[in-house]
Image (cartoon, rainbow, N blue to C red; front, top):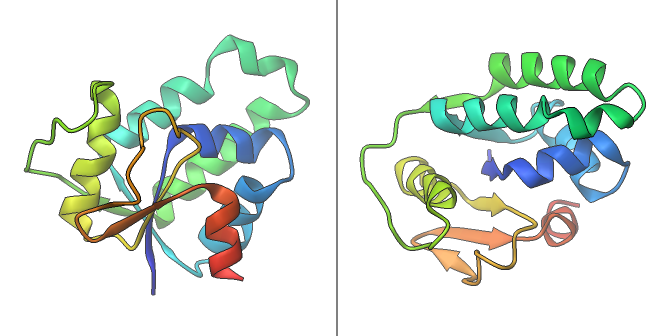
Amino acid sequence: MQKIIIDTNVLVSALIQKTYPYFILNNCVLDNQVDLCISADLFKEYCEVLHRPKFSRFPDFLNNVELALSQIDSIAKKYYPTQQVTVISDNPDNRLLELAVETNADFLITGNTKDFVMDYYKNTKIVLPKDYWEIYR
C-alpha cells in the first residue's frame, strides 16, 4: 500500500471544497486505500490550523474538522522522526521532509509550491493534489 503524507494546506482544502484534496482524503485516506503517515507534530499542526476562527465561515467546517481529525487519529500510521532536516527556509515545513525520511513515504502531497520546489526529497515524490489524484486514479 502507498504511504502518503498530506500537508496541512491540503487537509484544509479537503474540508472546504470538493476538489482533488477532498477526493484524496475521502477516497484514499478515509477508505483505507493508502497509509497516511503522520507525526505528533504534524497532527498538532492539523489541529491548530483547522481550529482557526477564519475557517468557521465555511458551512459545517467545524463538524467536518472534528470528524476528520478523529478518523485521521485512529487510522493514520504514527511515526516519530529522529533525523532533523533544514532544507526549507520555512522551518515548520521541514517536519514534512523529516517525516518523509522516517517513513520512506511514496508521496508528499502539498499545495505549497513556494517552499516545496523540488520534485523529490530522498525517495519521496512531492506532488500537488491534482497530480496525486491523476496518479492514484
